[in-house]
Length: 447
Image (cartoon, rainbow, N blue to C red; front, side, top):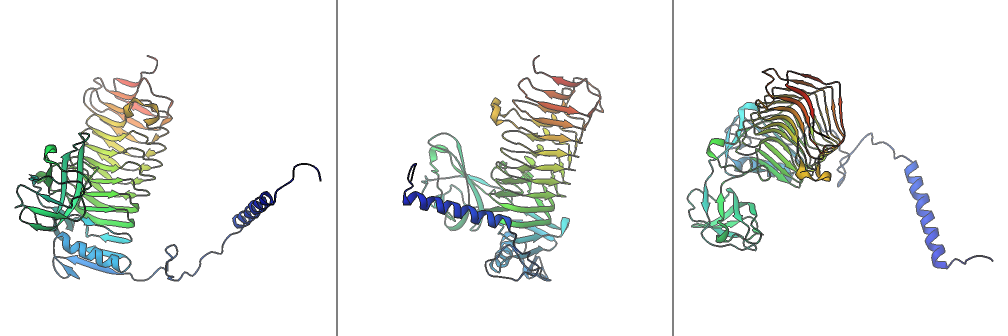
């Protein structure tokens, strides 16, 4: 025998690898039989029979399975349906005033009666903490407890004693003695008096964390903006979701929230369609950091600070056939690591500064919004005398601006159709109609 000798161990390893490869190849080349008559099998959440009737629990001021007009009655219905494996909570006509969020669970449908089913919230109160609480504590002591009740949703805020940043903690009051509150969970942050900690009755109207397969439909949310303190959409909103998958939000109005109308953070395959988000202090619709494949279709986003805000790292999203009107700063804003998204057939009118903004993303090339497509949109009357319909900033590259109609129906003044910043990479401009501007395209690259 010539050449190197194989050890028994090497031979066995090689034989095992070849057998594994053969099995994998065989598995890939065969197809499993289609499921034509599924049964309800314990633990199988892929194939389910199409039942004629599923569990529905009604909530209302009267003539309902559960009667009442506050968060407790709606939450009781959600929890009941969840315990039985999912179903529908139907909110009958009425105005429901919440003292805490409705916490949604996987596999439910929250169905309202359109404009006749209104969820709103109490006026907010903010008070100072009276004693220090450490990160491992599960209680706080406030200076004035008169406005708070057991069961209330609260937000705790303080300057971080170690790095100076703002800590924001969302909790529920579960017990009290005088002005001393027990919370549903530990703080995990230091609330020291040196950081001027406060407690406020602020919360999202609908919220969830780490759930999936939920439908929110045909419902009106009113944030009582005039009587509530502002808190940004990284924490609350008319709807606020965190680490959730496969949500559908359909025919929902979210209005008058002193923050965002709808915000979802690190949430994947979220569908928002035929909704109306208007007159919110923050963002109309906020597909938040890391959210993959959002579908935003047929919505009206009006009179918010920004209509549609693509946050950080939103990828493979589609926004189409939305009406984005009279937002105070930007109709659409896209930036940090927001790549491979498509915006098409939207109408963006009356934006306060810019119709569509590609943010500069801290002037770091890799942070910009790359390979995004803007096609067949109408962008009308953007900004003041120096307004811009589409403004591409930073090191953005791979941008496609195709077949859009950019119109200025007022005077040209100093207005610009498309502005391309000096550090911007490749931009494809094709088949666009640009009319009424002092400058149709201002390309600052190389100038």
